[in-house]
Image (cartoon, rainbow, N blue to C red; front, side, top):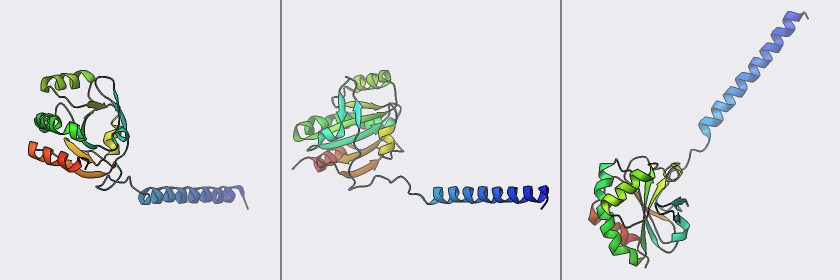
Length: 177
């Protein structure tokens, strides 16, 4: 066999191996499990975030209490509208075992503190600087509210603005018995 034929066979084998490898990568990427979407009944993903006063809030530390997680931004008009409602309901439910954690999505401490001061918010406000918590909870639109039972299970997922009555009913639903 001459050199040209050997080279052609070698190149053909290498090309065939490359095609098989590419086909395998495409197939395995297309069929692998997608990131599971958070659903009612799931265990709420644990997280740790720092509030504006420098206090650490770890979701699992609230076991035994209902937790009203609210994802928001200062630029979000519906978020702005529901914050005073949340503050009013927090005043009613904080001594009944219901906690609010307002999770701002990656804004500066200055912007968030200005907003908190403007509305006189009494509940903990934390900033998800890396968007890791937002991603863990599959949050796309704001505002978004996730209710977590005293046992740490997701009981409700709502995207969009809430009325004060809805917030009150939601807090009542996660109040420890």
